[in-house]
Image 1 (tube, rainbow, N blue to C red):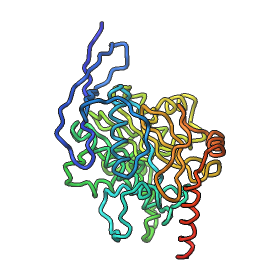
Image 2: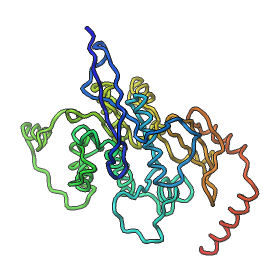
Image 3: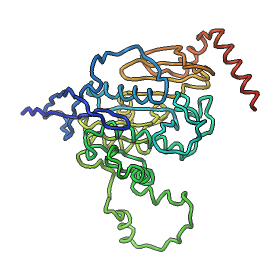
Image 4: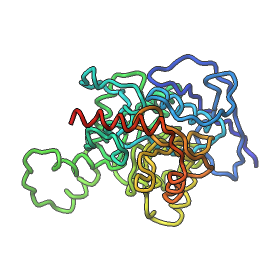
Length: 368
């Protein structure tokens, strides 16, 4: 028998606050032979007006990057994609969480998104720390939770790698109606396993019997067994998962089916050298790179970055010492190291750029 199910996933994809928008709802049907899902997928035009793809342009600042990322996700949802990969520069500063920053450091240019962030790019001023990485990933997760807020917090799950990361997000997001969601961790024992790294004296372990060890495995909150998404999850945001977490994500994807939207945030899939199985490799290769903004191979193309916003093409751009990035190559697929090297070797740099960069380097020398 054929069963028709309307899948509804409504989102204004707002950053920072939920704005009232008029949605044009869409639905599609599926047969009972296909994998069933309790999710609802409804995509509407958020911005209104003409939604045709324009010439690919690099974001000019942090706000523009977030806006363009939102638009790419929206377009992917309209095309009913439910497996997405989103990647921002390593340690990017989104400025979401309140920080003590001097006025001289407050910048809204694209440099503020990458400086002190991607260590492979020139211009990383302060270097990376685990705190910066965790903050950046948490800020990105928050932005996406806000995007999907019209769904209702009970239908959104922000999934962190361990309980320490999840608990920090809960504390910072507590009481904020704009970021309501299920905040969970794949490794629910992470708080204990990472405790030794957080300082403090280690308690002497007592000998435990079989029953005690079993009780500990079940944990104080009664949770046991492999990680599962909270009930009624329609959008699952996996925050900076590593190879270990990808194993759990593969199982989750197989269990929930295509009706549940799964978005990987900063999974760095292009850097994964080996997957647990061929099936895992095929699964994660099927995730659409809806948004990518990060450093290209600095060994092959110094000072260059790569960008892609769905459904556009991949862009390789060079970041001069002064001014906005300049596009040097465009193609359908992600640039390999060799393709970056070839594009870099054949690019043309104007005399004005050469003079400006030389002047910038000379000025920088005065202050050393």
